[in-house]
Image 1 (cartoon, rainbow, N blue to C red):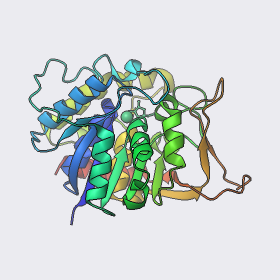
Image 2: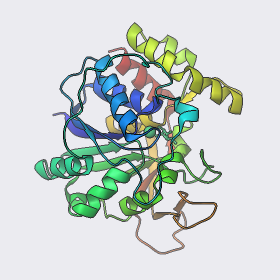
Image 3: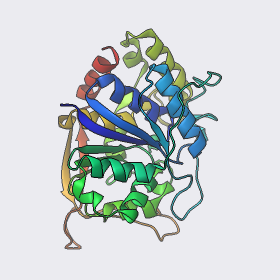
Image 4: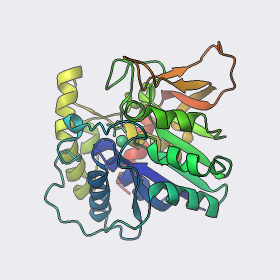
Amino acid sequence: MKKKLILDVDTGIDDAIGILLAIKSRQFDILGITTVSGNVSLESATLNTCKILDLLEEKDIPVIKGADSPILRKPFFEHRIHGEDGLGGALKDVPITHKYSEGFAPDFIINSILSFPGEVTLVLTGPLTNLALAVKKCPQITKHVKEVIFMGGVVKGVGNVTPTSEFNTFVDPEAAKIVLHAGFESIIQVGLDVTRKALLTEEHIKLLKNEKLARYINGSTADYQQKYMERYGMRACAMHDPLAVGIAINRNIVSSEKHYVDVETKSELCDGQLVCDFQNRLNKPANLQVCLHVDSEAFFELFIAILNS
Ligand code: BDR
Ligand code: CA
């Protein structure tokens, strides 16, 4: 039986590729894709999600809008990486036919989990605002969800938006705090510690046989790869969000440990930083499975096989 899945996205370049991967894998019964303010505005994230569904001629997956700003803070967009439109300009003037559905993402998440207790996997690749709002409104969802996999934070390395913080936890640290302390039994953090090792290169793109997808991925990631080149001296594009989807498909591509983790919300310099108590100094029960190693080769084998299928 296919896993029931909700993807929660702030569609951006890598969220879009994560959506492609989830759909093309045919491993999931995708109940819906919920959108959130993050890389781009809620409006743009929603339109970008609809464009990606059009690209795959996927008519039946509902797209539901969620929060248009973080819980307490102002939106913080990442146009430097994702471009003005959020998809690196690749589908800029393409007309959109997929219509988003009525409703509010946190309610959609609650209703889906309560309708299919123990069956729904959530993969979140944007700030955690929608899930935090869902938990606040209906705390019992934590007992009925199958698993939560989120891309966000960094536990050993450095940040990508401030020296200490990763973008998704930086944008809405209060939401991350609610989610981390909500009491989810199975919750996996896919942070920069592993996603920075899942680097898509032109060599990978050359292996893609589906011309339409290859053209899209090449166009969408071109500027991102150039920015990466300027900073790190290598043309590549980190597959942060597709890795979270990859883990929902095959957990064995990463290894992880369970620890107590909290997030900084009251600091001048470190807001959004995850603090992982590796040595259990705080003596608190572990609340998060943190991914520490990834088999990048296995991930890209899976990635290319799925996109070529
Ligand atoms: C995360 O931030 C966003 O810019 C990406 O889409 C990804 O979800 C990486 O830090
Ligand atoms: Ca994202």
